[in-house]
Image (cartoon, rainbow, N blue to C red; front, side, top):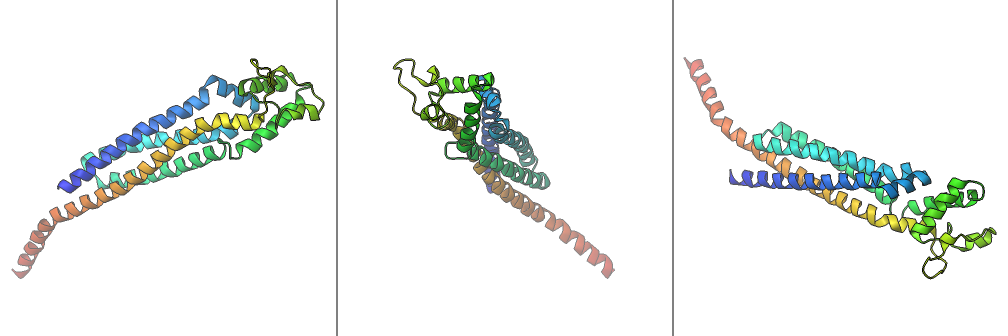
Length: 247
């Protein structure tokens, strides 16, 4: 059946694309987890739950996607409608996981999200602890220098609380004071990383939705073809039974 073959090839193509995208999503998540500078910021800010929960969920979703793609390709080759049904179910579970990870990452990884107020609150804690806690002072100095920011909200925080303006708040080239909020600058620094990850994860979810639709279509054609193949046999059996009864 030409139509069935075309649908099978389409499903193979979508499974291959899903596998590649799943590998990319997993690679980006692992990079966010183990990249040295970012990992250092996360540990010092105690932001493991905020910044790593989304990538962990996406790692699980991409792992499931790779497994279901292999299952879907094998089920398509042997034309097993039960395995195709299992593939559709597993793909739906992967979509739910992917959407959950995507939503959490966007809600805790871009500028206009829960990340910015959380960072501002965390930077205020470090700001007030910096006078007697060397660890808090160190991480605040490092972030102010790396992000070219000054204070939890702006450089006037030091003036308001009668603190000495640190050298890290000034540009090493011009000597001008950095005017940006550290919470906002850090969130803006995070946004391209989580934005690319979320965009690719969303594309993967959309392709998986297409895979589910095509797999169910293929399952319907397989069942229809098998019912046609079995119909003459059933008619012969029924007529044979009728002849025996007449005798």
